[in-house]
Image (tube, rainbow, N blue to C red; front, side, top):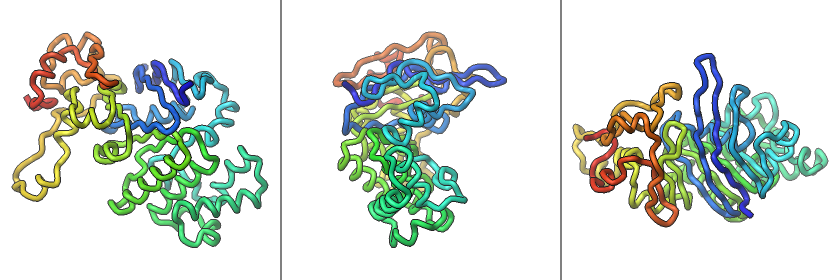
Length: 336
């Protein structure tokens, strides 16, 4: 039985402008120890997917489809039932620790709270475990810093505290939403190494959300490329990076500078870009969400839903012009 399984997961947002599909038909199956990356531009649905997986979708959202944790259906659970799971079986490292941490509560109390709630630890025992967790994630002098407030830590230290909170109850599934945002490169490496070490140590499922291609390439086994709320390409990370199929995936990879380019390229040379911008969720075409920005766009792309095109070994992408796209691998996104 899979640890976490999603089938046709969908999130619809209801606003004064109408209903918008923030996540469209996402499906995956994850076993203990699996790592999955979600990548795409801002506004593509990555973070909304994470909130849906945690039962934290906004009040104006409708979550449908199926989401199962060891066979138990989570869609439609009451808030009380979600609270029993969230932080215990499922945990999340949020994108911005300064807004996720409560500024008026000491960090030790915030780490201890889920321990007292889910493991029935006494206040003293929870405090001792909070100190041990701070030490485990590399906070110096944890016995003293456990009584500090969030603003008294650096950005990297606050992110480490978020990791300690997420791992406090040893969850089965860890969701990391842009865990290295606004951190310098050295601290980014330390944070990711810590997450990988703890995931390997405890056999957790890791869902890593990022717009950073390098971060995804180095830290996950499988990946999904999202655009306009939909998964446009999915497969083993090595295959997707080695043989990108969807024009959007190719555009993302082409726009990433290599070290050689940085060293030898003339300052006037520009990296390839994807023309246009991510469309408003209310303005998505009925067919392919990438229609209009893609160099292969034809009229039917705006009206016909793109079929799934298998590439072998669990690697697939969605495109109604797959034959043309695969015959011209050098052409990317909107650069025609």
